[in-house]
Length: 512
Image (cartoon, rainbow, N blue to C red; front, side, top):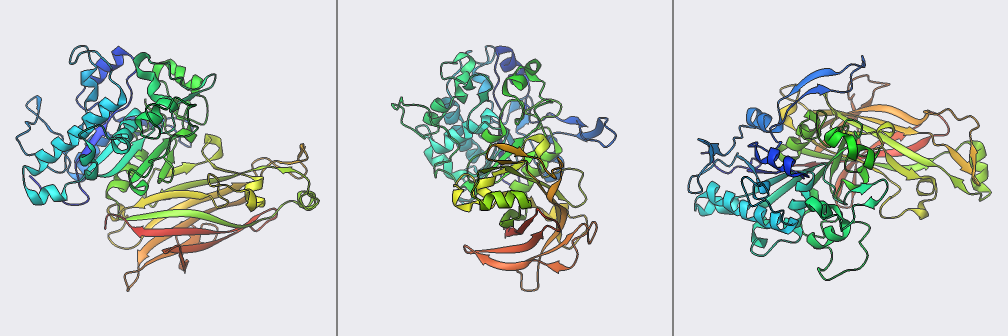
């Protein structure tokens, strides 16, 4: 057995919601509950056809790439008095108790599942450490969850059931795929009502969620809160990752009923706006909630998972907007204090060098671009906490393991595009000189992150229009901001209307 060595801690996988009894029985009839599902299809291909891409599954890739293993042996779970390797994947089989064949057929509430998770973490610690005090002190575990599984993890962390609070300290990181962190909303009825108790569908009602997440008292029967996507200081938000799906069209589960009920700007079941936890890193990928193009059984999902768990560098990108210029007539109307209405969309795609996948993809056509109103961009005093003027574009994790060369910098690129909006002046649409799809800014920026002779981070960059396909030699300006080292890259339009901004990159060691 191996010793506990950061960052390779045990992984507990918590699957998502099984609606019908048939779905429950199908779930418990498999050993890995979806974590071993692979895929063979990539939807986007330049010919328009479906391209083959063999993704073995997160489980198998963790085994092949990082030496993880399961905890099954001779048809059983390894006995509790037998040591298991720290690099183990454990499936939290909470639906076994719901099964009519393996359990009692009753569906308990989320807090019961959360308590079981705490008990499982304690059991894993016992089996990994076997009474070794040093191993017990070093013990950590990762929680990886799909859909409702992420809510079970949050319930355990934010409102631990009796007897499980002490085990929270062992959770090092949490990664969620397509979790409805702010509930599930449908087109006709908005949030799932609390009286939808059949098959525990009320788990996704914000009023009920607020109680099991510890955001309101059990005896509070007031109106449901608008948002329940806060960790409420119960867990470090920087160690909690939300992966968001943006492909609603390819969610074919339940004959597409939920895809039609939830609509665009979703993964087919969870709306994009409900799939993140506030103040946490997140990425957006063009994948559906599950199925052939599902988010768990995808290369994009796996790369974000392993880079967040095991990566070497975290890079955050914020666009500091200094000025946005307007068409002359719009500027005159603004100067005359007329009411201007418009929406700015910031598109970003983040790709590592040598890869055929995107780490994060936020574009208008998939409903995931960063949105800011005219007032937020051109009247900064109108900005609020939810939509600050300077949009956070991405958080990404780089890994030396994935270098395309044996040594050297960690290289990735950012496609950055800002669309020209459609303007309204006093309620009338202004279309003079407007061509739909034209941009204020459209460029690919190539970046290389490395350390200098003083072991300090630096960033080189190049614009694809100047140094095609490579970062170039220009070093980004290093500035101090709020106690962090930030690298600044000028972003200036060569046209008007246009944008004048700085791309601010914060690079920091991860898992050091």
